[in-house]
Amino acid sequence: MSRRGRLGRRRLLAAAAMVGLTRFETDAPARAASQGTERAEWTERAEWSAFRTRYLLAEGRVVDTGNGSASHSEGQGWGLFCAATAGDREAFDRMLGWTGRTLRRRGDALHAWRYLPYAKLKVPDINNATDGDLFIAAALGRAARRWGSSAYAKAGAAIAQDVLRLLVRRSRGRTVLLPGTGGFVSDTTLVVNPSYYAFPALAELAVLAPSPQWDEIRRDGVALLEEGRFGRWMLPPDWLRVPDDASVPLAPAPPWPARFSFDAIRVPLYLAWARVPVPALMEAFVRYWSAFPPGEAPAWVDLSTDMTAPFPAGPGMTAVARLATTADRRAEDLGMLPTVASAADYYDAALILLSRIAWRESGAG
Image 1 (cartoon, rainbow, N blue to C red):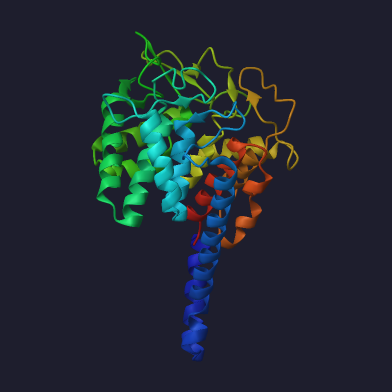
Image 2 (cartoon, rainbow, N blue to C red; image 1 turned 30 degrees about the vertical axis):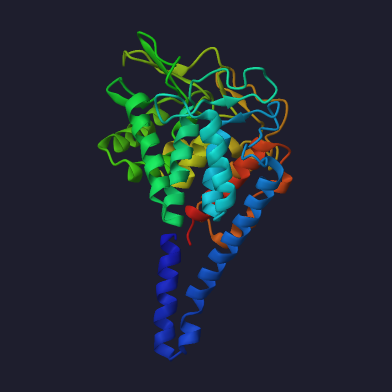
């Protein structure tokens, strides 16, 4: 709740006491707020139901309809997290079973990043994707609390411990979170994905497997996001090159395009969701989205040339933009966001669903 909301509520209750209102009338603001939260939770479950119907197969696989019907640890993690949030244990267990059987790596608790349903070798690369593992673990932690399951908590803690063991490095005097166990470290440079700093998930892992390293990852991740910004609007790239030598500046990482795009859109989502105070960066997002007419922000901007995509952002990116640019996120205002039904594919739908959860969990209620 905003400071203005707290003061307004306090004055209202004081006035009610002075004029002798009944208990029913005095409790009305609290009851209205509670009802607003309940409506938001009901809407959240309905949105999860729409997502589940469209993108979750019977065996528990979340289908990326925009990428050849592949599945990713990212999608499994998001699906698990949303199911735990919505209280859908049947879907949660289906997804958890498929994820463990199909993507779990040998030798550690992490998961291969991609499943290709039409390929001869369906899991051709056993490298993990850190954001997927973060959300799988976070979902297990949330499910453990919701359903009182020590087995979920133990499984989530094992992933969290292996994130710390296998995916954390020191560079430039900072603790850095790698995007995966292989392929992102050279003799002089690290590559990171700024959108893999999933702050709401990191908070869950810190409960599952307590360690001072989580605070370091959060603090140094914020510093990396603040420093690693480029172009006219000073936005983070999808992929960031981090030289070990602190005198060498950060830069967008080749061979990926130097863009604020489909990966980096999750940076403002996670910052707003976890209410991480990064004023300069959040103001940069506001300036960027305000530079275009409503509904016409481009899907990406090139951070080297400032050229923008020739097509607009989809409803998933629009949901993130509205979340990140709305300071007072009240549960009753969730209608400001697009719905899962408006999404053309899995990724848009996932961003919408996550933004709606973030709206409620970071809001005034």
